[in-house]
Image (cartoon, rainbow, N blue to C red):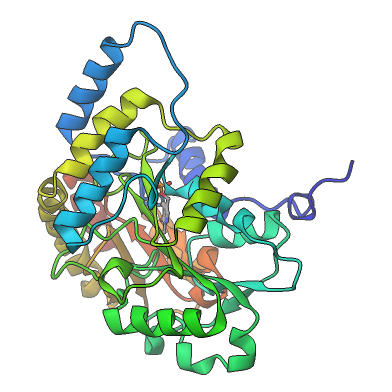
Length: 384
Ligand SMILES: Cc1ncc(COP(=O)(O)O)c(C=O)c1O
């Protein structure tokens, strides 16, 4: 059998390439600082750990988890929506659980029949899973250009009606990884109008919304009511639960939610029920992400000052735990990386996130205070 053409290309998942590089440097004895992966090192929300352990200890025998989510878990997601967005969502028909949002994002393309030549529209600078999913499912996709001038979101006005007719799914990620840019409600509303006019589904990936430093970033939940979107939320960043694999798929479109439930049932995607029990504590509490954001902000300030002292230009920074920056005198991401590598700091080049990332780099600061301080000291030694 021939391999899937995408796998025949020997392509690596680019976000892990630089993490791997850092690990190799460490193994070779370099005192390396690895700022490549958005995997928080700080403590998981403690109540989650307590409840998860308690639930596990109470389980003498095991049982398959419900792939669509345990009732208490789905109720807690509905409660979170009600408290934060003042909307009533039916946990039985409008919400599903997922094993973290990555797998749900990856599988979403399978929901639709692509035989009529429709395409997936992907920002040309984005979380690489959108492109990998389209490619591995054999669905055509197009990259939509974006830049600092368009606030790092595609310019919706620049797409003609004829091109919109080709759109089957549109990925939007706000706050945006890697640039930290935030879309406003007007942008979401405009996108919804277009989705209604041209009959496509908006896939909103919002795993960073709860880590913010000014106002809470708008969600598609704050936009006009529509059944043209699927929303992917996650506890990974919000509650420091990357290893627990807990997320939710939310939509007003009951037909899509029901189809997703049927699609996902044979996949074996259910999060273990004792983890879902613990995760209820995370959805039920809105304070802890704000507490996390306080120390993230301190770390960001330390790094920001060091980067700016060397002439780096930082974009955004009002949400998530990334810094996205360039240097006015250095055009290539790899050249910027090289300067940091000389100091033992590994980051991810903007080009790993798509064609429009060239010239930028992304640094993560969900590491310890000490690592942030050490990074800042080393940045001050950079010669540029
Ligand atoms: C933009 C974006 N979406 C989704 C995810 C997936 O996160 P998880 O599967 O842990 O929910 C990530 C992880 O880094 C991400 O950056």
